[in-house]
Image 1 (tube, rainbow, N blue to C red):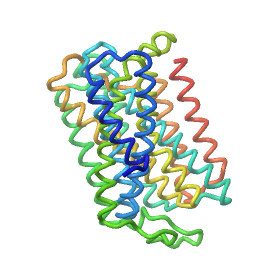
Image 2 (cartoon, rainbow, N blue to C red):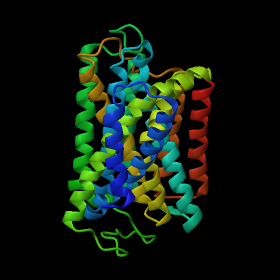
Image 3 (cartoon, rainbow, N blue to C red):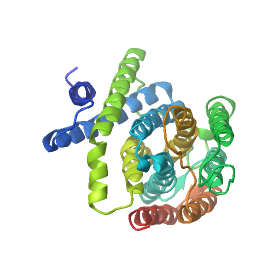
Length: 358
């Protein structure tokens, strides 16, 4: 009970109770940021404990859904402020999550694994299915609104938004069923000889009691992260405005924050030569980010005032198309060298540069 992974989630919730709904002075913002960072790391730890108990690919799914809960809660709470800048927050955050996971996390995992083990080996059937689902979800939810004519601007009409939300849920549900039931072996780590690794041999799985405790602490950590991020978000927005940066940078910062647990877990798996687990985390997070966030903001738009801008601009559509093409070429062989990892990281760097200097 005195371990930091237990103390920090509890401290985050306690701090949240005392700071919720208040204007925070600078010292409290610094403290909240430090506790928030600790809660993120604690969430990673407890998610990995739960993941070890339930095994792959369920473990990757647990962490992906947990991170998406943070993202959805942050987006909806920030949109509830009702400012004009919040109209495009969902689009900016979801697109940032796609770029971070499909280029940043994926590229870093491939680079780490290939530098450490020669080549990064994974299952192209499962990874290709995940990539196809991400590409479809991104196009339906983020590209089509730019070209539809039923509503002014890059927005969906009510009927179109309902269709996009239902399609996202259906596709995400089908993928989860494929990943966990019908074709689970496609998403398990493989050896360099192509054999599926059905269980980790280096550590004994935690007991059910330990896993349940970690699940509860994971929930506390997520509540703390969501609430404290909401508290420090005005400071982030003021900093972005003071620096003269585009407001889309706020979405990038939110996505970077909530995807930190995924990034740490993916790199750890890559170092252990479990690249399939890393790709499950990366693409699963991108898929959950779109497949769960779009329905959530569609539902929230019923009572939230103001427009909901989802359509991407021309520059971001080019980046998305290039990401899908490059990722497809990366996935098809089932193995990657440092070159593929570097290409994805350069695409991620290009996205960050264009977010700062559009």
